[in-house]
Image (cartoon, rainbow, N blue to C red; front, top):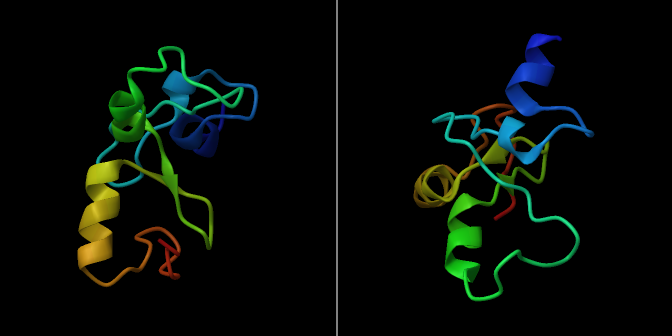
Length: 83
């Protein structure tokens, strides 16, 4: 397995393979258009990846908010994150 596959997962990987690029916190993709528990939307928002619009790198909500307050540049590709 390559280092990129370990860092970002593969398309067929489980959701636990996705981690925030900055802090490495595990993130969960929302798949199938719905949530497992419709009353836990807050938990889904906090654990969902926020992807850079330039390169697709995943970030957690905390790192995304920190970037929005700062330069709005992706720490991976240095492009505009688009949020």
